[in-house]
Image (tube, rainbow over all chains, first blue to last red; front, top):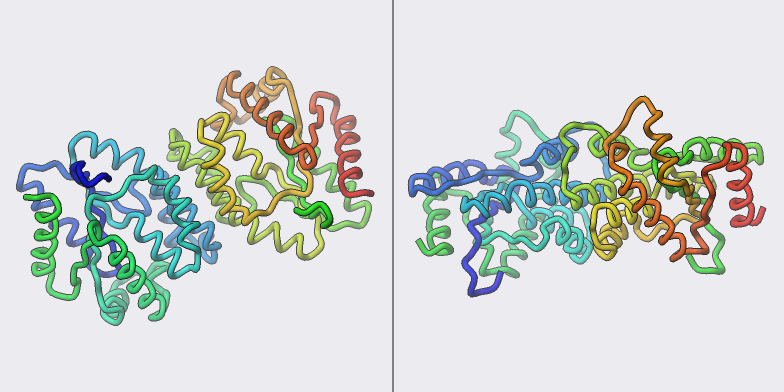
Length: 213
Length: 213
């Protein structure tokens, strides 16, 4: 995205499991719709018929357990390739806002920091998936790993990633913080520990700043 | 593979649909086993629990229809990444022969020639999937597109790729011929039009030449 072009109205929501992304996406959608905007909400992996099949394979299907890091990378990016071309780009072209629960940054953090793949490897594969598309704004919901794990454990259903340990959560958090430091214009950190309404105020402020409401 | 190192006993079988690969793999397996060798047969996409799920998605599942070329590339290579790490490399390390029904060359031809992706894009993604592994020998079963299509139409079940048209078959054939010309030491062309026993003799001759029986 060149500095002079308007930001594309594509916002990704990133952070650890149980950081409150999904709730905040719903609230931001309502806020934008009250302003008369059209909003499309999606999620990764998933958001397309192919992607939802891959989501099951990545998160809960028994045949997905123990897959190699490279396989996992290629499946996450396959889901993204389909989402970008079938959902996100068409919606942006129709003038809609797109709010996505995870995008490229999750791949960089989870497959890189946590699975040990090189940034170069991930960036190459991810570039094929996105065709160069980046969010106009990324909101990083930052949460202390201890708090995140307590929230995860209180959920009824665990998935594969939820069962990883405290070291994993800590490395993921640091990975996101490092990415935010590397992309300060695009990625804005939000403290995800306060009450929902307070976090929503912080989200609205970042969106208003980025898109000049 | 450096010229001085022994060829890894990994043979890929390539060619259009209905070129007779599967039959020839079974015959070569028998021949090798009569010599006291241990042989593992696999196929792409597939060959692992993850890969077989992806095979259904790529070849027959309704949610896979119309997927973008980039998505298709990433799914074929995801299946390969898993197969290389979970099946092929362990088998080679145990001293087995590995016979694979399709490998990287199919991706270069089908996703490149037929789907319009650049060789550079495919090679980058494929390199992540294979980790650099190449077959010691690739047998290209070459068949006139008209004959291939007649054979395909006589089968009871079509899959997605089988339903493509004559132009597609012709472009695929040319893609494989071009690849063989670019890699003459590794890829050997076999005329797939004669009777099964005659083709099998040609296969045995190429294997004996390559592995110095």
